[in-house]
Image (cartoon, rainbow, N blue to C red):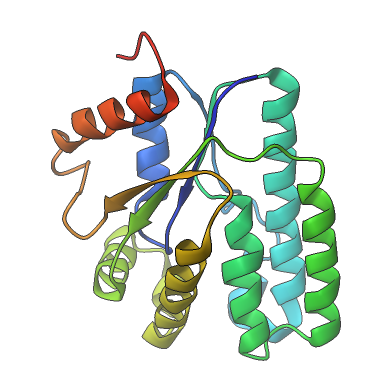
Length: 208
């Protein structure tokens, strides 16, 4: 069976960039979160309480399909976000803030845990650890208007949930990247060491 790497980290941490570069270096197939074609994203930012369940269910369904495809293809693959974050970070935060009702949240979690029964666990989770200040700077830099309108308190709430979640994570091996000091776009020399470490952890051969 192929190896599966998943990225984890707050919005703006650099997961998609890592996925793109690591997939090229490792020869893995990249799978990206469905953002631009998510039919509920814009509505969600306009009215989170009304659209949170729809948004999160779409993300969950898309992630499930990606992992199912990886299993069916017996592929070496890398995903730019883990499926665990959908439930343990984003849906939980919306529920905690009253943006997702008890009924919606419990239904969502039932769907989530049923899906997990049919999926393989990742072989490695790469956690990009970033401060809220770094997250805000990168969100401004990439300039998605919907994200830039979100109050900083939201990113802090996600950060708290990430710290709690990653401290209890036990689904796979973990490789932590300091996202505050390591920028593989501006400083590509960092990537060689990261690729070397990942190759050693997963016992990969013939890596570029």
